[in-house]
Image 1 (cartoon, rainbow, N blue to C red):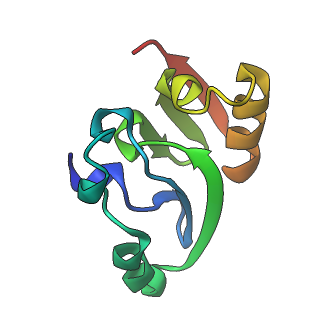
Image 2: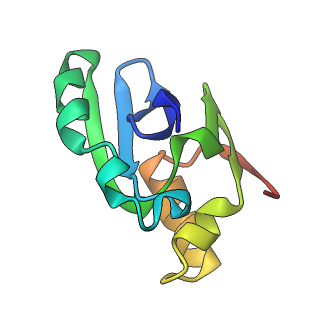
Image 3: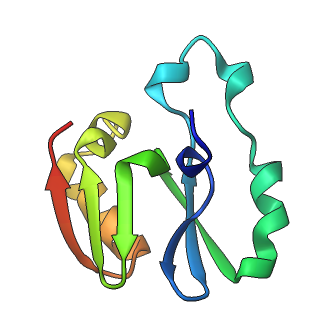
Length: 103
């Protein structure tokens, strides 16, 4: 795992989104999941909006009004439909232009 996997994702100059970090590759190793206490120390960066979507930050690249994400977010949120996951993802990011790529 890398630091970009669990911290909030920057979506504008002073706005971040913190997704749930529960990656499938750490199932059975939950004690290795970085807890939100680390991210609470980042409030100096700006506003951090929490989302209940499970998203590994390594699967998202945001730049300005554009976001590229891997389709892994659909697998990690299999309790929702693809349409619902994408709608919630776009809503929390404030509707950027998004491109999904296979993974």
